[in-house]
Length: 179
Image 1 (cartoon, one colour):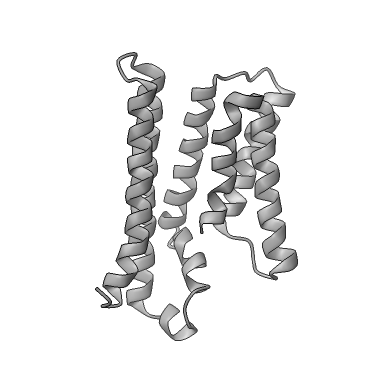
Image 2: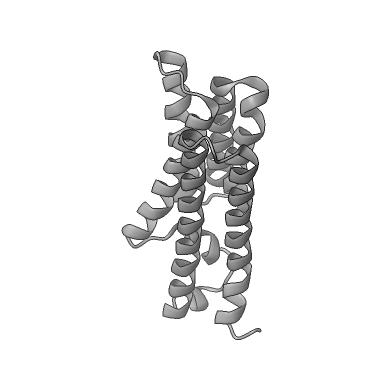
């Protein structure tokens, strides 16, 4: 699942170094590489998060190149994070939490077919949705509230991601009775 976040990390690392449009295009290309790797090399169907990332970065990159759309770095980060939240929340809303696709690759079909497994995957997806909601709020606060510094916003974002990562590793152990 961590590989699916590479385009987002790539964008975050590059946006202030090489500019918004090139960073969005680099993230879109990274997303495309992940989707193609899964389909052509691993022979696996595309995953919701990876296809969503490709569409998100491709659309934003195209908009900055082919239109007069010229947002600031923080505005693009806000749009990217809103898009990521929409992908994750949308997958939950349609009853196919994005986490199921990754989790099924790590367990036997017998375990993957259980209700406990599905509930665990859904809870993990909800934790990620909550983390991305916090990140969107932090981005919005940094954009629109002068009293919220970049350092504070970044600390909140890192804490939200750390909590989601921790929960992702902790909950399956608890659900399986390993703790």
